[in-house]
Length: 240
Image (cartoon, rainbow, N blue to C red; front, top):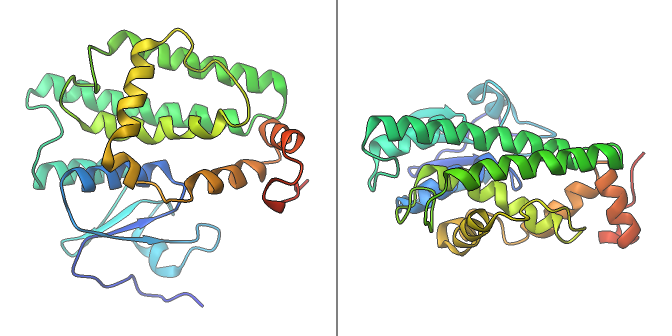
């Protein structure tokens, strides 16, 4: 039985789901700023009443802080950057606006990733893999010398793309799809983000296993590939 009240805590509380990339971006910003916070997972298949009261879209993340509930990861990251040092957005207004636009591009890339892992057949799977490569090719043209999006300074665009790239560690266990072929700057950026302590800490220790189980349950072309390679993957049969 779920409580009808949100969790009470003097520290900020990040209402989370273990696999949600939008939660990870908020967690990365909190960690980069050294904010002590509690992470509280909710079951999105059985959402408690208190969660629906504070999350109008019924999605994670939600940040409980300062007596208020903030929903939507971009709003959470902006609030944290406005109120807590160090600043992760650039000071110049035009550059800052450009960064916000690339944050939205990161969200759109996540939508394409969902299209990839939900693809019903090989033709759609290949199409979505090509679309992802095209998106990363756009990033290749805007990246500088690195190691991060804004050069030496870690920024919120990095916090947005780190969870994007984390998916591909799971995908490479299934097959080679050419997502990053011929993109040396993107590959170097991915490696820099993967090594960042805040990025490593933003995902659960069992993220890789959770992701594979999630993919297996999609009844998609990708999940059929997993079953073909690993018929007893985690003991979870395909659901039709």
